[in-house]
Amino acid sequence: MHRKGYYKWLFIIGAFWNWGAGVLFFFWSVPIFAWLNMQPLNYPGVMQLAMALVFALGVGYYWVSKDIYKNHDIVRLGIIAKTLACLVLVYHYLIGNFHLLLALCGIVDLIFVRLFIGFLKAVKKGEV
Image (cartoon, rainbow, N blue to C red; front, top):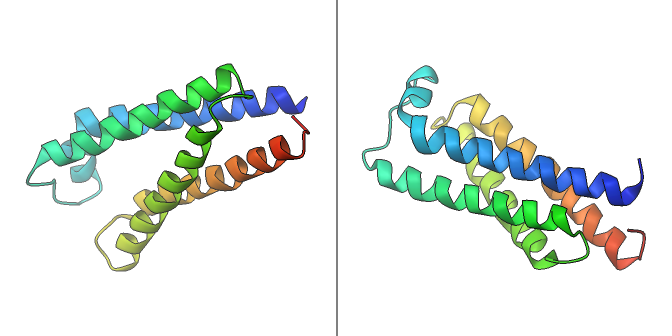
């Protein structure tokens, strides 16, 4: 696939990944946690705030997909956010607070981190 087209789809898929997680956990975190045999948060507003921010990052990835020659700071912010999300999710899995499925979502974010870094390197080299 042409690199420009590949990167456009990378950021569209990244947007949908964030939108999906944001919407699912914003509206249905209690039943999702029950399904995972986890206790729901005492303060659901904290989860909703976090998921609103996850959703907003998805909007940023969508903007990048519309013009992959702009908004590279959104990509850098995504690298930071997804790295931190992965670290938190995997850490809490390792200490027994989170279900494996949540840690795997962090691993997906880490895959996006690697692909986003590849995008920024390709842009810097003029390959896009």
